[in-house]
Image 1 (spheres, rainbow, N blue to C red):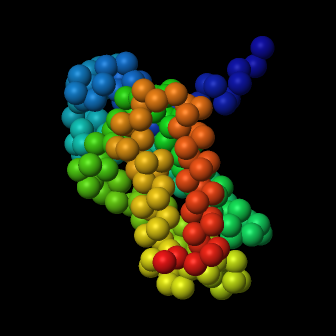
Image 2 (cartoon, rainbow, N blue to C red):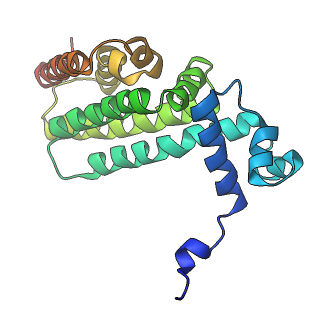
Length: 205
């Protein structure tokens, strides 16, 4: 029987290292994860790992970035959609809330990397926040231009969204609610989402 080239083709070393790092962090947490152990499982020296990732911090950032990229791509897709601005705003906030809460519940050690990056104002967290801010700004600008939002000033509208939704879109705040039932958190999010919509459509004070 002929072999399947998709399964026989070797995985690039950088992707292999990244996958192993993710597995180690999931099993042991970031503090007990070492480049030496990852290199050993990859069948290479730790010096060879550093050819692809110059430090453990760089490797951790790559692990964090790997799950954030699809989230960011999803936000762009929502912002690009032809739906009304108020609908897109609710969907963007909902997508962030579900992605963060879902990661916390199913992959807590990987989510903790994001929490620590955010609290430490690391580059990966700043980039993600900028991308999130960009998509929200696009939707708010669209809503103001079409007259759907009576926000008056873009800066105040964006500040209102971030302040009101903080509990659901800041990773550290999401982590603090880890013990709260998902149904309870979802219900609170829905109430805040409706309040944000009403504030933007009636005018930010």
